[in-house]
Amino acid sequence: MNPVVAIVAPEHAIRASAIEGMADDLRRLRMTIRNDRLPTTRDFTYNLLLHMQQKVVGLIVCNFRVTKPFLRRTGAVIGSLGVASLLAACAHVPQLPPVNCAEPGWTLRQGQAVWLPRRQATAITGDLLVAIHPQGRALVQFTKAPLPIVAAQCTATQWQIRFGPTQNKRSGRGRPPARLVWLQLPVCLSGGAPAAPWLWQKNDGQTWLLQNRVTGESLAGFLTP
Image 1: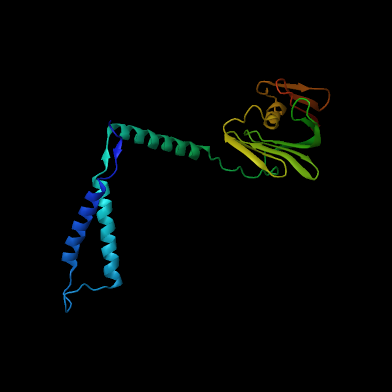
Image 2: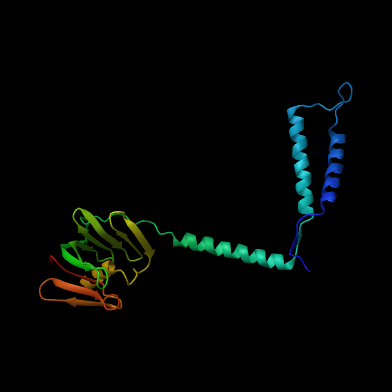
């Protein structure tokens, strides 16, 4: 049998080595005071206990034997922890700053919409605000007074969305996920095509429909020019 790790020597070897080491230290630290007794001060006791601890730790370390299987397993664990830490660091996305629609370049449109979260769900009617910037930035807010329902925002490199009064947040880098109808809407209003499986229909006037043919989710409404 080839054990992975032999942690310490037998107990009697540790005890014998520790006693021998303490005896050597006592001889070195012995101070002649009248009847040749050791002083019992707090500093001396602390130093003695500290040295005893170092002796025992030294024995454990010296008798610790590492084998190749142990190195392979330890390396795998350390590597996994390193990858996990790297992914956790990359997963962090800073919060986008609030949008100031009064800044140059923003086009602001307001109206109403009916949101069907999924097939056979209860539809929600509310007020819709969409702001679009030519640099790839967009803001979408859907509210049912007095509560916010959805607040979505994106840039050319980042996106974020908040749901409900509790402001449950999702965010990420790059393009927004295709499943988020709220961030597909600015693309369609800018003349682009939505990601599959969304279907964009623009009716007479300013009314439109954005529908997911797989899940049945849809967003229908109108916006001021």
